[in-house]
Length: 263
Image (tube, rainbow, N blue to C red; front, side):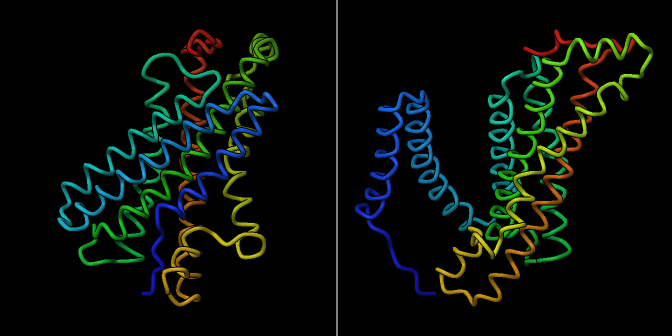
């Protein structure tokens, strides 16, 4: 494949555009200039480290190192879900809820794709397993984060309504049903939008990368369709799991609303 190498100057030009946006936001006093600069710095450091790690993992092609890397990715994703919540669950629940939901969804979908659909030899070949898991974790993370944030924020704001419905004799499952449905819907919005405009408004990242690397366009399209469907399934499973468990956590065994479990 004919890949055009990028120099440090090429990347510096792109970084300059981000710095220009940061300066503009600072002049407008938007309050997120620091976050943008930190995110940009993290992108450079994390991706450079990832490149070095992947070089070692690809060379070794050992299931132990692949599993270790997958666990690190899962833990990092779980932490991001926790810190992005305005009203997060108290204690280890804030971390475990997102992590366990992503483990159930992203890992199961990745295994299905590797063992049944793609079928590389061996099945854990890092060239396929790591990128698949990374794309599923990243997109599932977005859905779970949005869904949980919507859930906890609305429960906090609608405390009086929920307690009123409980006082009238409604079961907790029925009292919170509207918020639960809306939270799942919000969590699914990013992937639904991405699927709706794929090929019409946007060229998805994986397909673009393959085409730029010289892969036949139709082959790149087939892989992108596969990835979009896997992401949709993983996001749906992960978001539904997280919201259902999160809803249950907000009520005790006597069906009382427990906002003390949020911070």
